[in-house]
Image 1 (cartoon, rainbow, N blue to C red):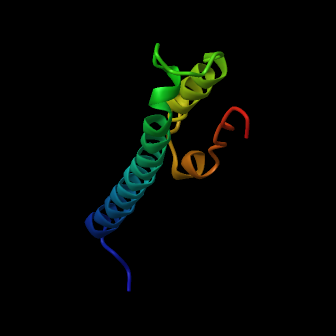
Image 2: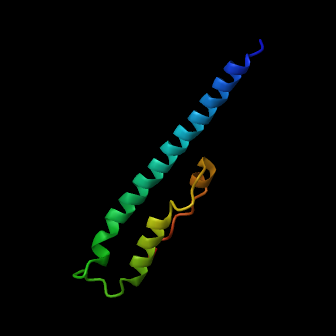
Length: 88
């Protein structure tokens, strides 16, 4: 069955909308995980933290915050390399 021009256009639009929805789902999942990792390490960079050298933790947290920069496709999100926790 051949599609009319309008039907083909609607089909292509549906495909694009699904790609966008899937990307938003994937990036939101990444952000939830990233935000959890940030929350777990908040105490390590506070002024009254017992950790003497906070620089490695500050760098780790910056890498986590920057993780979503430049991600524009599902493939980008799935290829993310998570930073390593200091001392791990």
